[in-house]
Length: 173
Image (cartoon, rainbow, N blue to C red; front, side, top):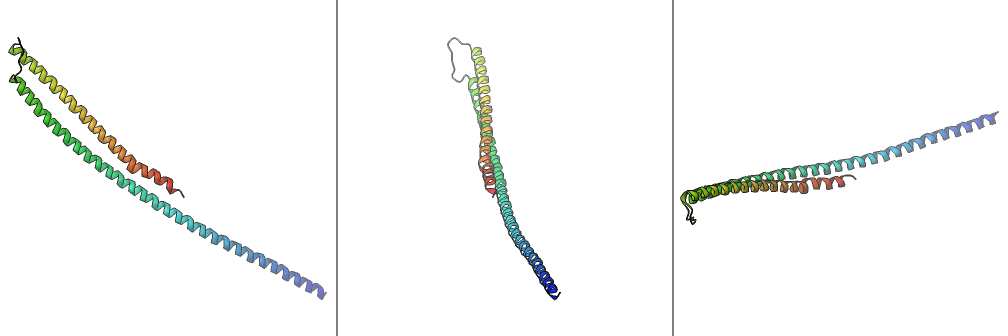
């Protein structure tokens, strides 16, 4: 019987050893998995922070570029308005000069024309020239305004939208 107790003791010791070894192995595996998980989480957090920093830098640069574009467009609009005002002033002066020249006869003579016919022709000519020059100024003003708008849009696309698009392609790791 003592052999039986010895065999049972040995079997119990072996079973305890196997259980202890299984528990120790499970603990080592869990510790290794946790260490690996921590390493990957740290790397993912670093990548996420770097991506967020690049995104903020890109968006900040785009915002600054948009503000600079708005400022440049405002300056162009002010220059355009000053040009329009100067052109209108010059047009008014030219119209006055033409009207005064035509009213005084301005050296215009026509064979067989009466002074009344010349005066009527001069008024019609002055009116036509005035209308034509006014329309020309309006067309030029519209063309300049559209030119400023197109230039602003081109600058916006090249300095704001383009860099944001390129940066968004490089943001994904």
